[in-house]
Amino acid sequence: MSPRKVSSARTEPGLRPGFNKQERLRRFQPRILQGVLLLAGLLMSMQAFATTLVYKSFDDLVKEADGIVAGHVASIESRYNPKHEIYTFVTIDQLSVLGGSYQGSTLTLRLKGGQVDNNIAQIVGSPEFKLNEQVVLFVEGNGQYMVPLVGWTQGVFRVSQDAATGQQVILDHEGNRVLNVAGSEIVKDLKTQPAATIVGQQNKLLSIASENKGGGGLADGKLQTLSSLPGPIEVLTPMPTMTSQLFLGAIKKSAAAKTLQRALTSVNPGDFSLPLSSNSDSSIGPKIPVVEVPSLHTPTKPQPKPVPQTPNQF
Image (tube, rainbow, N blue to C red; front, side, top):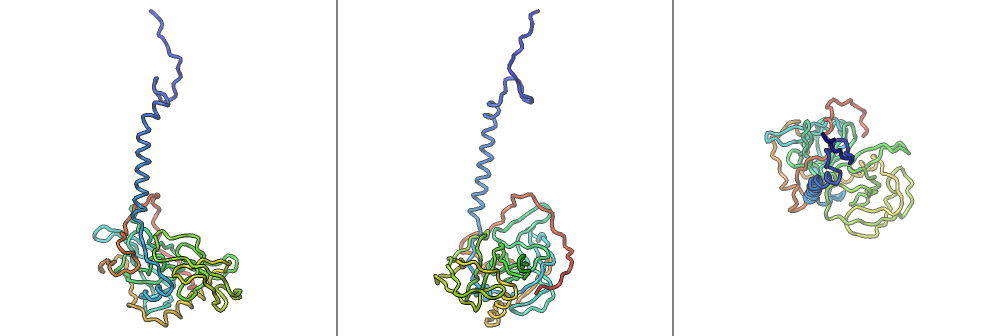
């Protein structure tokens, strides 16, 4: 009996003889290419359906709001409506009403989108909230609009403690520092852009005519603008963050001189009785769809409802 011929070719663990690395790559290349194309298509579709919003100045925020409040985010709860659409109810307590009329001790906002268990419905450009944060909100169309805030994220500001001074200062929704209210515009240190595309805004350049001598904001409001175009102001000289006291004071002063459009109303958590309507929402850009986009991230555990009470910062 003749001895069996044994090949001296080495075979990697997990690969049968004659099936080398090059062959494996050739077989899997089409699958890899399909995956890349699928991911690229998904990203392009998300960009194509990005939300477009109309720019809102400080005057617009005050004029178009049903009411303006400062308070503490006490609870965030997402639920399905009868059509199996996800809505989120954000309840604000420790209320301070800066503009408009409202007698309730809490205010609950209803926003489309959110997370129920592992199901996520994301509205591109919609504001996000965190438990226990202090916020300033320009509310409009609560219970009727997809996002009941003037200009969506443009109508949301956060109160934060300045690490250097210990003062309560104002940030916008994206975390940009608010530096001053100059005439009809809000001066910001623009470093982070919102998720939505804002149309109708053109940056202005600003220089400081006098040194700031107070705790946030500009002394006597002495500003020199290098352009009269509407839009956020880009600052040429470093400025301190505006304190919450000065920001709230500017809101109260402006709101007192204007008649707000409608009465400020709250929504009970789980209440879907009011029809959703975006026909009169002036924040949404013309002929631009606002779509729900599934999250590409691993779902996070829903936030708990019980919230410890903290002293009112306002």
